[in-house]
Amino acid sequence: MNRRTFVKTTALASLATGWAACNSQPPDSTQESTHILSFSFDDGFKQSFLQIADIFESVDLRACFNVIASAHMPTFEAADAYILPELMGEWDTWNDLVRRGHEVMPHGWRHAWLNKLPVEKATDLIGKSIDYFVENLNGFDASKAVFNFPFNASTPELEAFTLSKIGALRTRGDALNPFPQSGMNRLTCESFGPDNIDQWVEEKVQAFLQSTGGWLILNTHGVDGEGWGPMSSEYLTRLLGRLVNIPSLEVLPVAKALFSQEFVSDSSNAH
Figure 1 (cartoon, helix red, strand yellow):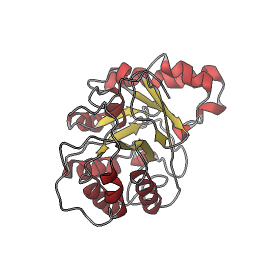
Figure 2 (cartoon, rainbow, N blue to C red; figure 1 turned 45 degrees about the horizontal axis):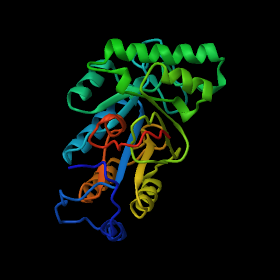
Figure 3 (cartoon, rainbow, N blue to C red; figure 1 turned 90 degrees about the horizontal axis):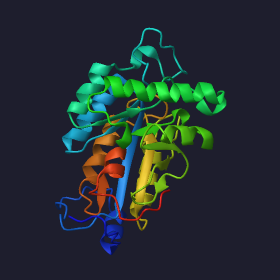
Figure 4 (cartoon, one colour; figure 1 turned 90 degrees about the vertical axis):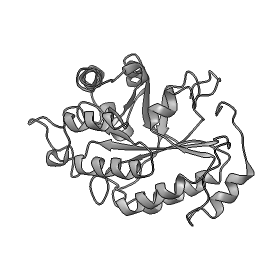
């Protein structure tokens, strides 16, 4: 299928209107994709991420996980009331998720407000986390990877440094990005919390499905009360079960959407 052609269809609007009811019709494999949706799960909660991986695999999808590089170390300290050492995963788990086809991407050396640190300290933490991924994550290719800023907090100077080390970055901004394009390396997202975000996700996704299209990136965290702004696993299961039946929608990990030639358009305009 050639997804380089950005085709807008009236069929999608009608699907979106009644999307809450599970569509029993199989997807039309000839339908061009006009919408890409990515859930970008942050921090590295072991129990949640394993559960999320199982949910995605149950509908033949793969997830995007962004982990704090040092969270497995005995010296790691709680970043806040949500990112606690006892909740975090280790690199055997992350490598196993990669083996299963999921994405594991850097989310900093520690969960710091990089934009509030001296530039030299902030760039050291960014570079250190990316180098650790290169050394410890099987198959990690920095040129086709995304650095996900902690708190989605960046500055132009930090972004320029980050892009000298890695293929793309994710930071705060509008969740609706252009369709993936050649040369695109700056992605923006929205998040919500601190309590359960099921309703917020539902509203964002419904509005997106009724739009003309693009790439929606929602920054999420754990499930069932774990992490800041968690979804419920029951809702995520039902949501993905509905989304896979929408012909014009692709649910993709961020790096796959950005770097796979199957989805990238010929435009060289970067966001």
